[in-house]
Length: 92
Length: 137
Image (tube, each protein chain N blue to C red):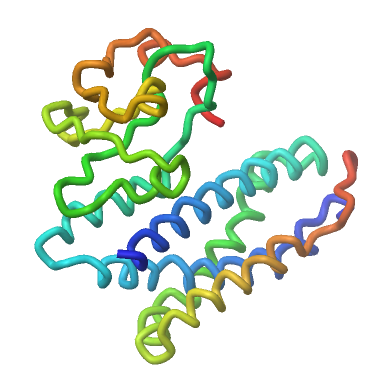
């Protein structure tokens, strides 16, 4: 079942990367940018807002366009997750 | 940034949109690839794959290396086969919180014929008292 194996691999890589990203992101916001925990949490709400917007249409889109939608989602995440000041400054 | 969160907000919104497009159909894609009678187990394996941690491969330390749910008769140990090139024997009578598990031991990497249920012990000190150094990679 190559599709199943590939899906598990995607899931593993995706959530591993996601959790790593948000750990580093929270540390960067709070320790680097001196955000309060509340402010850092509210900043991350923007991520939830984005997923909230497309969640209802994700399955219909995938039914119409197949696995290309998954690739599109991954491609959306790469530059968007990287879209922050670089190099990250240690003080805001 | 200068104390303002707004420079990162557009990126986060777009990343969240990408998350929806990736994660939600991924469940359908994965479960469509297995027979209906094993969909339950496949679903459990899929959800565990998101929180799986591989222990650091440390030859000096004996004990449990990787724990995951039982893969049953139908599904080979795909993630580990892909990662390690090793297919362990499922430990069918071992369960944690009601979930059957497979324990892959360090020795099994060298000797795949070692029975997992006898070699692996859930009570090994490295599991009972996980240290930050060896809990996660």
